[in-house]
Image 1 (tube, rainbow, N blue to C red):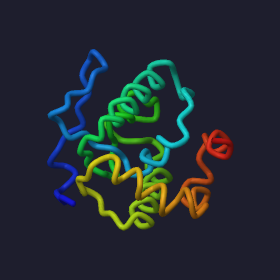
Image 2: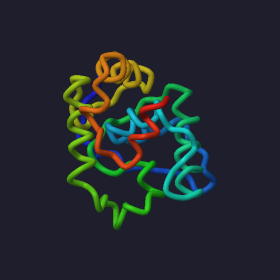
Image 3: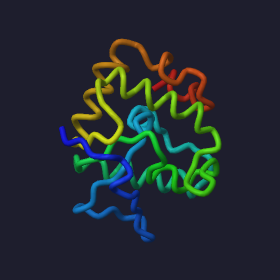
Amino acid sequence: MISIGANNLKSEFCNNHSFQNDKIYKIRAHHGLCMFYFKGKGYSSEFVENMTSFKNYLESNPLVLITCKTDVICDKCPNNVNGKCITEDKVSQYDRRVLSKCRLTDGDIIHYDKFRNLILHNIIIPGKREEVCGNCMWTTLCRNP
């Protein structure tokens, strides 16, 4: 696992909604959990398109920088105001819980499949998703995967 400061890499998303294979993209820790349950629903069609594109890109198993700050998913979220989430207190708790349960730290760089497996084996299979983000507005979607 590579560990560097999360601020050393910036979130980049191409205007044509295609990701570049030579980039390391930031992903909020709790968004790794969201990827398991995403069903094409979200705040807006622009948000859903962005989330779908990023989820598809992650299937190529790129290196990702795990962070507790805004990421490429946040780029199209209406809660993102000037690069900061208006519900930051709540979502940063989700991030810290994912990091703790997966024994990761903010700024770790790992392959996405490893991150996904850590979430699967430390949160989803043991039934700990509600502990991480049970008060999320989207939680009903996650109860019926």
